Amino acid sequence: MSDIGSPRRTHLAVTGLSPRLSKSERTRAAILDAAREFLRLRPFRELTVAELMKSAGASRATFYQYFNDLHGLMATLLDEVKEGIVTGAQPWFSEVGDPAQGLRHSLAALVAVGAEKGFILRAVSDAATQDARLEDVWEGFIGAFDELVAERIARDQALGLIAPFEPSAVARALNRMDAATLIQAFGRPPMADRGAVLAALERIWLSTLYPDTPLSGNVQGR
Amino acid sequence: MSDIGSPRRTHLAVTGLSPRLSKSERTRAAILDAAREFLRLRPFRELTVAELMKSAGASRATFYQYFNDLHGLMATLLDEVKEGIVTGAQPWFSEVGDPAQGLRHSLAALVAVGAEKGFILRAVSDAATQDARLEDVWEGFIGAFDELVAERIARDQALGLIAPFEPSAVARALNRMDAATLIQAFGRPPMADRGAVLAALERIWLSTLYPDTPLSGNVQGR
DNA sequence: GCCTATATCTGACATTGTGTTAGATTTATT
DNA sequence: AATAAATCTAACACAATGTCAGATATAGGC
Image (cartoon, rainbow over all chains, first blue to last red; front, side):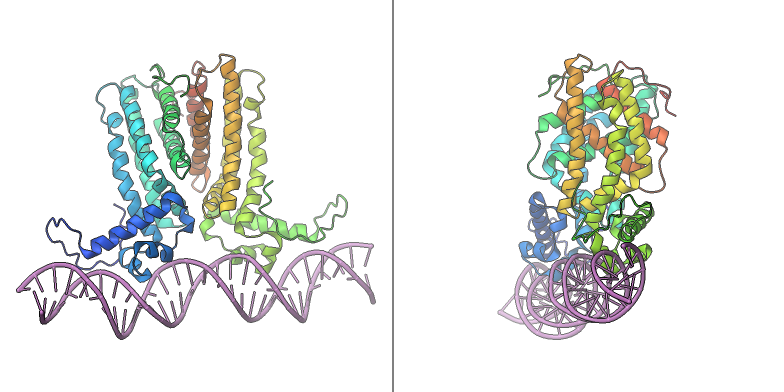
C-alpha cells in the first residue's frame, strides 16, 4: 500500500460489516469512480480536481478531504490493479507443473488484466512523470516484478531448464516490455487485439527463457 | 523534423557559411545547451522557463523567441537524437551480411546512443505525457521503428530465416522494450552497466528472431 | 424525533508558472 | 553613423493548485 493517497482522516465510522457504505465511504468511492470513468477515455493530463469533483457530485474542497492531490489518487488506483496482476502472475511464480505452461498462463492473465485496467496503468505511468513520490511508487511496483522474475529465472537456471545468463537485466527488459506493451495496446481507445498482443509476448518470453517449447496455436500469427 | 519547436522567426541572417554563429544562433544554442545540462541531472518536471533562461543567460521572454514552449524545445532535442539512432540501426536494416550479426551491431549501436543520450529520451518521454502534440511526435518516433522492424522481420521470414508469425505485434513489443530499457538504464544517474544491458537485449532479440545463432561471449552473464 | 459529531459547501485567498505584450535598449552589420 | 535584428524589463491575464474559515447539511445513536 502506498500511503501517498490519503490525508487527514476523521473517525471513519466502522459500523461492523455494514452492508451499506457510510457517507464518507460513498463519497470516496464516487471520486474514484469518476476518476476511472474519466481516465478510461481521456489522458491524465486533462484531469483537473474541479472537473473530477463535478463528475463525482461534490465540491472541490471535498476532494482534499480524501486525497492529498491527484497523484495520491493515482496511487490509490494503482493499488487496485496491483492485486489482479500479482494473483494473475501466480502460475509461473508458484513453480508447480511445467514452467513454460505456467509462464503461458501467467502471460495470459497479465494480458487479460492489462486489457481491462490498461487505462489505469497508462494514467499512473503518465502521472508518475510529474510527481517524485508517485514515480517512486510506480517504479517500486515494476521493480518488485524485476526481482521476482529474476529469482524465478535463477531457480530454473539452477535446474538446467533455462540457459545460464545473468538474469536481472533480462528480467528488467522483459518487464519493461510488458508494461510498455500493455500501456501501448490497452492504455486508451482504440484497444489492440488481445490475442495478437498475447501471442507476441508469449513468443518473446518463451523464446528467451524456454526456447525448446513449441509455441502453441497461433504460430503463424493470429 | 517535428515543427513543434519553432515560433515566429525573423530574418535569420545567413551570412554564407559563416564560421561563427550569428547572434540568434548562439542564443538558441545556449538555450539548448542549458536544457541538456539541466536534464542530464534533473527530471523534466523540474524544468521551468525561468530557471532555464537564467542558466542560458538570457531573459525569459527570449525563450519564446525560439520555442513555443518547453515541449517544443523537447521536440527539438529529440530530433538531435533521432539521427544517431537511425544511423546506428543501419547494420540490421541494410540487409547485408549475416542478419544476426547485423542485428547485434545495431543493438550495440543502440545501446551506445542510449547510454549517451538516454537522459534526453527520458526527458522527452516524460514531457510527452503532458502535451498532446509532443506525444504524437514521440509516438511517431517509436512507431516509425515499429514499421521498419516489422518489415525487416517479414523479409527474413520470406527467406525462411525467421519463423513465421505475425511480425507487427512482436516488433512493437521489442521496440517498446528497447525504449523503456534504455530510459530505465540510462535515463538518469546512476547509469546502468552498458554491457549488461546490451547482453540482455541481444539475448532477447536473438532468441526471438534468430534462435539458432549462438549468443556470443557473455553467455554466462557478464 | 432530537442531538451531536461528521461531512460537506461556499467563497475566498495566496501561490506558481505560463504565454503575451509594449516600449525601451542593446548589439551586430555594413 | 545608420539601420535592422535581438534582447531586456516589467507588467499583465490566465489556469490550476492547495488551504482555510465559517456556514450548512446530514447520518446515526440515543
